[in-house]
Image 1 (cartoon, rainbow, N blue to C red):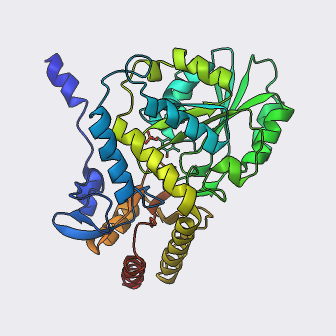
Image 2 (cartoon, protein in one colour):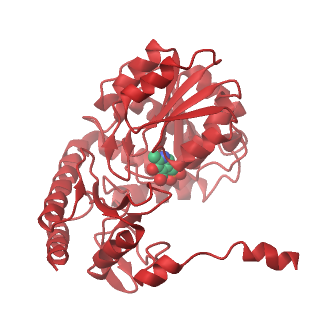
Length: 391
Ligand SMILES: Cc1ncc(COP(=O)(O)O)c(C=O)c1O
């Protein structure tokens, strides 16, 4: 009987999908990130992926990945500390650290893993972690694993953060944790001010630049470039599966801490290294960005504006953002699913967010128009949005 009791605990509540006639999660896609995606044999405009610069299916990136497979094989079948640390791995770590403008970087299989492993490696029970209340699940889970005192601060609210810092003496170390671009709304952190506050109160800043790396700044170097934060002495993490169009995560910062993590972050030490094809793909994206970032970014920004204008025209409530993200405020989870369904049935794939990804009744449907799409496809998407909005 105990088996029945065990399995009964896992029955999924599918009432929302039944009520709206739509389950937007785990949709099977039968294509890559080309001009149009294929779902159930139908061509769809994909405004759901994080392929900001549109390089995931770029022929040069694909060639680099294939070349690495030819040279090294599919995998080194080892963790970085053992047999996974090929010359390409080391070179990419150096290139990424250099690109961001920090001393050193390590590459993990994902940024979820990076954020998960970071805090228990560098913080302890005697510390305090102050974290933006909208921080990503990977940060929250990583922080919780430390077992120390955690204080959330109101989203991007410097006054609230300073109040907490002011009232928090006596800890061995205080960390302030936030993100660059909060991806459900596209809000951007006032990170320069947070770094200044950290300096005043002797706290260590930690920034997750997953949606900023490859997007923010004149050369796409991320939040530190965008906000002109020179000589950053905090910790930096980012995903390589968004603008950098591959997969993996990095932790970067001063040499001493990165070197320590190389030996003491179990999420790195005990996990198989990223595959050669992925490493080569990221290297290729950095090369393309070096010569083409400005042009690609202009296209990304202009697409964002076209979609933004069409959403307003269609009567949707849209969050205003300086990031290449358009988020429709959909309120209840029923309306969030219904809005995503309406887009889906008319040929647009979007990302719906319901609790716990967002607060209750603050649902969002997010649209990201990647730079791989053609102007014609963007115009087509805008026309669809206007049509379904006025229905
Ligand atoms: C802010 C943020 N941090 C971390 C992650 C996790 O990154 P990865 O997909 O590389 O595990 C994500 C991805 O959703 C993210 O949005």
